[in-house]
Length: 111
Image (cartoon, rainbow, N blue to C red; front, top):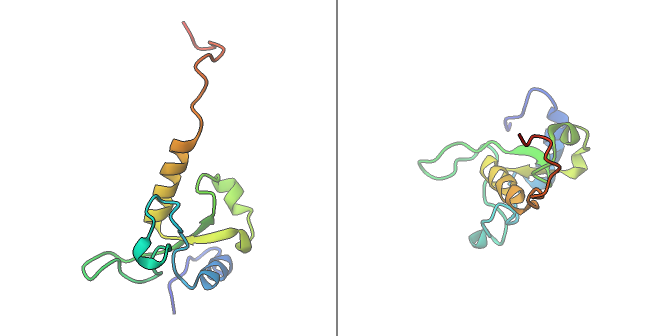
């Protein structure tokens, strides 16, 4: 039996079964995962390498910048399996791609 969270196990299991207990990142993290046909090779409850760490996948929205409140309301069909490394990297890249704040803001805090 694979490990699962205490809360939300039904949703977690539905997402993981749909993903085959494998990370569904297709390069959103910046890594093209070229050696693995364009999909991250990390699997739930497996190790990253012979001397690596244990991977625990998470069920999260496809949009890595979705808020926790928005993510909590999504059904299992709109969630994806992510390894923590890919999810963190995808969120970092998505934040970099956001448009910069306008330089000519109203000056509310100018002293």
